[in-house]
Length: 355
Image 1: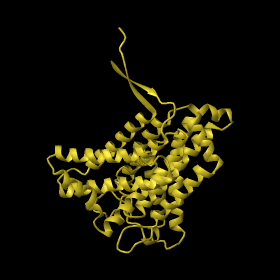
Image 2: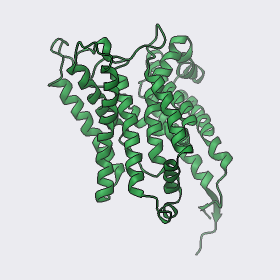
Image 3: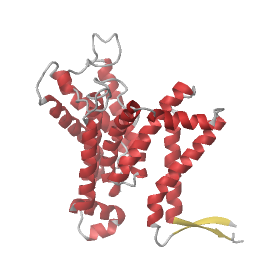
């Protein structure tokens, strides 16, 4: 006897939306087992990892702060993922957006112009779009796989940031740290809640979710992209342009990632450093899929992912565990989600082995 997976005639729509909750539950359960294996109390581990970050209003504000770049990146990526355009390079596009907008802050240091901050946001979006346009061009012109090209460009962007903060943009008064000068007040995002670090970027993210929902559910172009992703041959028969879908999907992801990048350096960081992002661009892919590529789902999944980041910091402080344990939880979440999807789309059967 051996196990065979057969495609289901029609996947369950109910389980499609319930599977993220199942994946989250399995992640929690596996996390308790993981704490036990590491020699920590599962109850204490659960409390430190998932409850401590939200014990006061400041912790809730930090949750919103960390969820903001995840929302921005995920809603942009979901536009492309709907059309089977696999932009894996949001992390690099985030970094280039931070450099593009940050250059304006450094170039007009000391400026009090009210147009400086909007120009930085626009430059960040354009920088991310420019970086995303490279794999889009390679895909549409040479049929190069956008997964590989967008991913490789992440490392180019990281090296570019490292070179700039160690070289031309390094703060001469920064005690030899790899960082630029601090941005002026006119080049930083206004704080929304006094006493916290939550800034106007949260409003950008919420607006992006609304625009993303309208585009994907109420626009003809969004309909074309969904048809191209779910039934490629039907889309071609209807005359929908596959190249246009690639460009829109890549540029939307690049623009949102670029806005996330400039929101970080003009927000909680206040300057360009070697470590702008702890991996928001990569984590946003998990956020998009856990949210089922829906802006409403992305809103809740980004909060969950932000909680995992904060839980890793708490585990490092109180349980003497590496902060990278948050990535273990992220990986488990994605693993269980993909595993659930397998059983949603395929039915296991025991088949007798032929002699």
